[in-house]
Length: 69
Length: 509
Ligand code: HEM
Image (cartoon, rainbow over all chains, first blue to last red; front, side, top):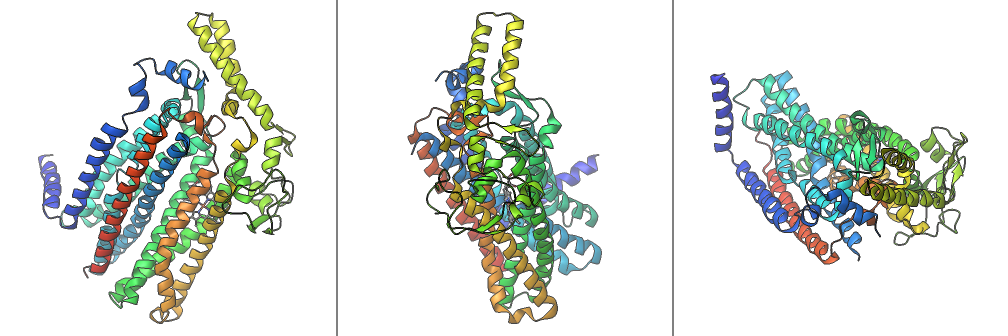
């Protein structure tokens, strides 16, 4: 078990250390995730129902939106 | 443009960009698996390096595409909140499974594939490479299940208390005929695109007279894989069209520009539909200058050369199927839809007032009976339920035409590889290179058919787009639309740049 864990650790550790093109790709992935989860999620896509309906009253909220007009 | 238009445009933009990344991942996954299998069998370093080269391009594309689909989910929650709430129970399961499977399969097997060449046995490495592709393909399955459900909502019942469509049968949702067809057709389309990419890139090396052996062998693998996938996609496309005829006949009528249907229908090869305007399907009997293959549409839609195919007007006016069942007219569907809405209102009011369970059960039964037409309750006129014909019609022809072109390409490449000298056929090599962007256009055209053809429904017959959207200002959605345009275009430019550099560098043979 310990040996397996050590091997797995080395697989990832050495792999990440020896990356060349991979470094650029990871940098892009991190920038992308930052933009998606920090910029977009927090500032632009917070979720309409979460922002507008009271907790537990979502069904009533939706009913008011789609049935009462 | 209204809020609905902006929300639709934004979803289309992000879905189209997302789909620029996905198919190459699925297609190259198979190619690199094949190359590595050759290495495993032959033990030759040549195949190892060939596999590593295609894996590198796979990695670039994978890194660029990963997480771009999340944005679609954000849009559901913000721009399409009514829709998103109503389908939450159905989508929750497939999307959660997708997330977990994708995370575990991709983070383990991708790591072994890239980092494990010297660390694990040949067999284990090969298995990881194939499992990387399998993981990505399984992910696609769940997303397509969600999409298929919107086209053909099965295995669910509407709960008037929670205001949600709730899943009644996971298997019906996961294995609905639309989901199965969609999965097979979409994965095959990705394989075709991957094959065109491999053939195109290899042709470029031959044009540049570089890495000749590598390019020749890759061409062979790419062209054989592409030819098999292209033949299979024809069969699967035929079946998709049959399923569309059964489940979304209006989509088929729009794809075909079939205004007035009947028996013995011909399949339109081309006609003079104005690409920029909705044609007058109410007055014309068929599009101008129509050239068709006799009986072929009847066969495609019913698997009978004389089968009955309803046109747009039949679908609006109602008709009787050959088996005697009557399909309601639009007016009748609207009446049922309006009844579903008022009964639902009555149910919720009765519940608030503490009505007896008998009253509630009776009202609930009435809601269920009319629920399949719920969305029609919001329709005001006939034109609202007819998809935009020019896009459906031409995109369908681009897709099918592209499929035929790729078969020709793969056949020619194999012919010149085996019977002639492909190095001399520079026109073919250039043609193969030019087919790379064409494959993307063809693949996107497929989605245009599927999604424009579904309009105006977010959930077929149950929820039109204008009811599914949130009450946001169009300004807000316009801003995020422009933001996405900039972000995705940048991402695409970066991908093309890194990809081109990696291709120019070539394999490390
Ligand atoms: C004879 C050839 C083909 C036929 C008859 C055909 C038919 C169809 C039909 C009917 C749909 C709509 C399915 C739906 O809305 O549920 C569709 C969608 C699609 N097609 Fe094709 N197709 C063909 C070739 C191709 C080719 C060559 C590609 C790409 C390389 C392609 C890519 C797609 C994609 C990506 C979709 C959207 C996903 C889906 O709905 O399945 N198709 N096709």
